[in-house]
Amino acid sequence: MILQRLSRFSSVLRSAVSVHLRRNVGASAVAFNKQLDPIQKLFVDKIREYKTKRQTTGGPVDAGPEYQQDLDRELFRLKQMYGKADMNAFPEFKFEGSAAAGARRAGVLFEREKARQRALRPRVEKIEVRHLDAPRPGATFVLNGHLSTPLTCAAHLSEWHLRNSVLALVDGRPWDMLRPLTRSCDIRLLAFRDRDPDAVNRAYWRSCAVMLGCAVRRAFKDEYPVTLVRAPETPVSAGAFCYDVVLDGRLRGWTPTREDLRSLSKEAHGLIRRDLPFETLDVDAKVALEMFEDNRHKMELIEEKASQNPERTVTLNRFGDFVDVSEGPVIPRTGICFQYEVSAAHGLPGGEGVLHRFQGLSLPVHMRAHHVIWNRLLERSRKLVTGVGQKATERAAGGREARDETEAAAVPAAPDPGSVRHPAAAAAGGQ
Image (cartoon, rainbow, N blue to C red):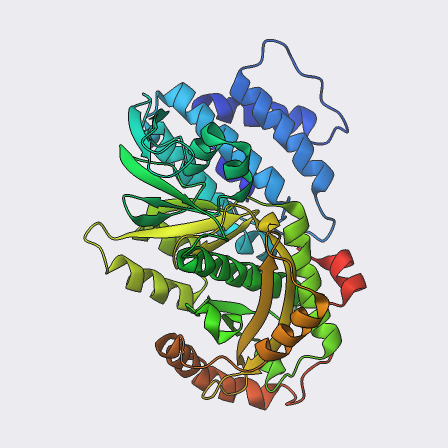
């Protein structure tokens, strides 16, 4: 249980456990002693917060992502303070909780790894970044390595660059706008209306696909778990972006209704309204495998990505509490999307009715379309996109085959029409 794991952090914390568990856990309010050690204050405060969120059902408790991420970040800071940055002086800390907490494991571990990497660089190193395009070709900016991003350069250039830059070319290589620059380099800032928007379009399409995966995961009821496979790299000319998903065995042969697709689109629009930043982080493959240890398909993808470089590193993207394996550079924020709609979900051949390809269409806020043109594009996006992600699709289909036969004997073949949350249900029970 989480309290017992917390009690192993240090002798100071153990003494706090023995005293404050007896005196304060049963109380409705805790008065802080001004002489308490900072780690004791944190512990007592978190116990009080934990109790206010505790459910009456018994067993492990999920106290919510904000509680977990805040607690993990503070404990990391305190470990540095008390252990003088010697992380081996403290035992490994892992959250235990409900199934919902398990789904957020990747987000918590992402934050921990991000803090660990930041602690490895106590000194700020200066780098020189030379801008190659108008309005100031050849301008050189002195920035902070591993902290400053291409968006920092855009802010130094003009308000127009800050609003319209979507992607950067760093020494000719596509680079996320919010990804820290690690060395001195040449940079170009790209926008949607550039002469050659191919790299920008691919980044936008890729970002929309990741948002689609998040929307699908959130939209289905908890009793119908979904497993995200991957967002296959899809050219804009295909007419739709995609995310391949393995559905629960009880949804074999499921065909979405218009209301189902509308509910999925509603989830995506919630992400757009929140205008969440896309964070990018390079991690060791072992860390990535721990994040996705309950998803066989993601683990296979991580191994595939790690085998492509000698350091065995994997790039991850995060927005909000959703973390995914990166397929390439993405846009800075979810709010860049404007028109966005989940248009179709097709059962894929060989998937035994549970492997589906969800598809969608989107246009950015910089390039809005008239409703007539939009409807024509939307109609085209409903056609099944083929010829992408074939190997991953075959592996996902093969891995489900034996399990599906067992599930078919235990559950009805007809899918539950209420498996996807409708707008009211989504508001009441979404993640």
